[in-house]
Length: 156
Image (cartoon, rainbow, N blue to C red; front, side):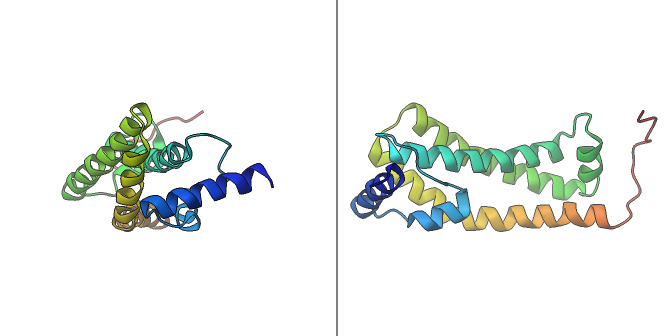
């Protein structure tokens, strides 16, 4: 039996023990991929979930604080002040989920990891829907002509 199959069997045992979601569902939503050989399968899953949220937080952070990236500055301008306030509240919510995942990584135990995986998976659909709305608005900003508030200078 291959290493990957062994880790899948380990996860399936943990899934039955803790009532975890199917691995295929987690992989679809959180890009779990192949579970590396480890004694801490749930820690591996928690870390993959954290990576997914880090990607969301990076994009939200770039909208909220565009720094010096022309891409981020242009995208941020497509949101009204009220929308930015909502994005910030959403950013705080996702940051809280991410912090929970990181805490579990540093203070890991199987039971709390299982509960956290279930909780994050259950709440993910709402997070994903909200994030897709934001991404759609960003996409539309690039498709539609928008007057920029910043004066663009020399890029050479």
